Length: 333
Length: 179
Image (cartoon, rainbow over all chains, first blue to last red; front, top):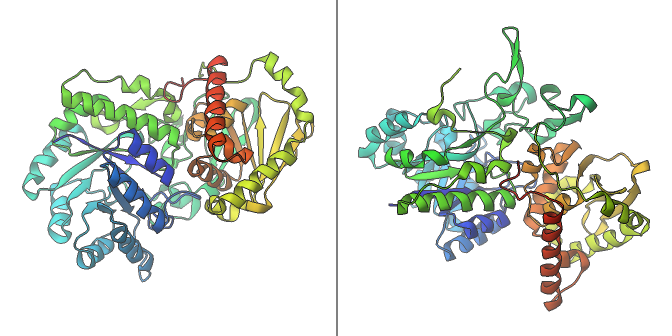
């Protein structure tokens, strides 16, 4: 069984670009708070999703829909509606994090294939078995905090459940246990796990400071400063620069992107089913280039050909001008 | 520091382009955007409340800039000399060929920002909404010029080929291998 390449789409045109570039599956979400990439102008209406599913299926690709924020207590209607719209569109699976949404989908939409979002941060055999036994979850997207060895052990431990695992291989690198990070809530008053954005754009400012470069602010707090001409990164607190112990540094993580292309053979050996590319907020130029490159890498791996030089091929697209294999083989500070 | 070509026009072309600033570009572009809004009314829906925002688009290698208010059939584009730039809700600055590459989907805006080819300031939410609207619009030169039918396909192919050649000539990097 070939590794499945799961690719991002923030708009219908990005979905078409991903499918045309060789995506086996495309993931996307609705234009509302049910989706953990809830940026202005991004995402799909129910009608656009239906058309996107039609386009993908005609070309042999699948569509997975993320309804992966946590439902508000007593106000679950938007999430219920989203689940119904995923089924009505004929999508191949729904990606969910919240147990209330999982429970609703399992009870009322039993034919929907359930994938567990990375937002659920399920990283132990016990957690995965719970989601599989209780809701019938068929695939788990693993948090970006596990090493390849840990993923291998995890896959061995859950083999009897038949649950597949999906791992991120390229794009924005979240160094936290996702779905449990409240860092940006302190700066913006908005929880990324409820409103679907970790740095809401209406709280982000880029300030030209002349010879000092550009300062990035979130909720009025300066979180980083880039010298003129130096590579820049996203305005996320986990990649901000802070003073701690008398030293100024990128305390949690540097502005950097994940690229695990060189680890594909080991990830396959570790029993991973699907490889996920991050970037629903990125443009068609990014999507086409990254999907094409990773499809070449997957095809080369399957055919036993030498691996493609993905790091050099994708160097222009990465945050902060740098790439890392992240926790897959990281020595933590 | 990133040592890279940023895709600016050569000085000689910058000088040759100066007279273009005297043309009534604002009027022409206003008509083009309004025509597009009439033909594709759903195009501007993604902007939501940001359709009333003003976007100052400043080509770093030209002597003039534009202010766009993308309000559908009431949209406006005004051109300004760089000596008297107005304030706006959003300010985007970068080489003209790279800005045009954002319109046709050749370039990814985040990558241009990471590599400091583009600089942005002002209301980030309005900028993100405009970026995503343009991304989904799949704009072609014929949309802006109001050309339809077989002539549109010919025009699009010719203009996009010319832009790609121009980017090669000025040393603009391709998307993946930018640094």
